[in-house]
Length: 276
Image: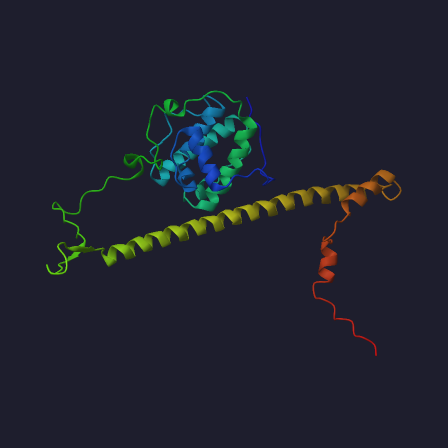
């Protein structure tokens, strides 16, 4: 059995990162918080099992992977399944395992198109398929965080809120003041979260722009090949069909000019001088 190969040449159906996370989590009963969690390769392996049962042995998948060599192992299983199913795509493993947003977002965008082209709508129980194994990065603290030894055998009681005694004549209770240090830390955390959100939005926009440029270059190359093929035909100048094709290729719309015309007017011409 061979899979349907896809080429990521259009961005019309691309999902945002939030939509993509929702699709992954809903499909595989996960709780990933970031696109970067896809860097372990475990989710892709289970998606392949959903699409092509038996193409990946889920018993071999390291769902609780936390280290790069474990990620590489999972992607090796994924690539082996690609080879079995004659999938042309080669996963950029060295980039993906670094856990950077842009690399993982680009790959999962392609994989979503691959999934849509091959999914037959068959019923699938993801948690049962992986025998209930916890998945790293999916909200299970024991799976996603390494065990750490305590730094000391005694615990230090954290400082409580500061209190100020008010004279009995003015009030019958103590006023509690919030710690300035705690408020500053809360503000810093909020600012860091906002910065991270903006950085992710910027990277998401960059991925979209890059995809649009690839799509533009892809279709321009096709049109250029057609033009060269016509020009190499002996009777292209007299053949009316060829002439109609060339007219379509060189047709323009309002607000658009071919590159050579744009280059000519790259520097604006001097304004006309009135004659007196």
